[in-house]
Image (cartoon, rainbow, N blue to C red; front, side):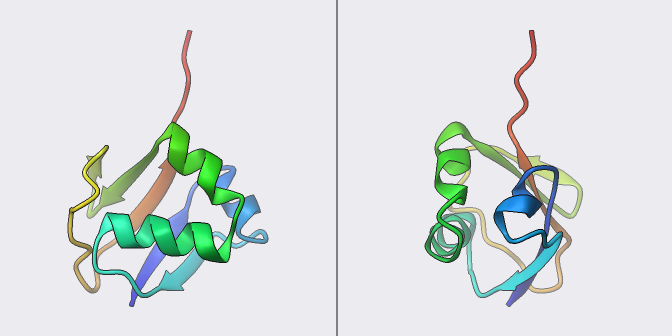
Length: 81
């Protein structure tokens, strides 16, 4: 089980929660379970969500393991212009 902090609009999708606990061994499983529990996550996953593990941001690295006790943040992809 890992504790995940949901940043920005992602918290609203999870019923206003800023932190959730979920059983996942890697980023792929985390995203799959989030989409199952909170269907509103799927469009964000499709657009891209950055995952920060202990201060290091991972993008498009779905096989990255989620270590127990790690600080995990999910951040929606930002568009700039």
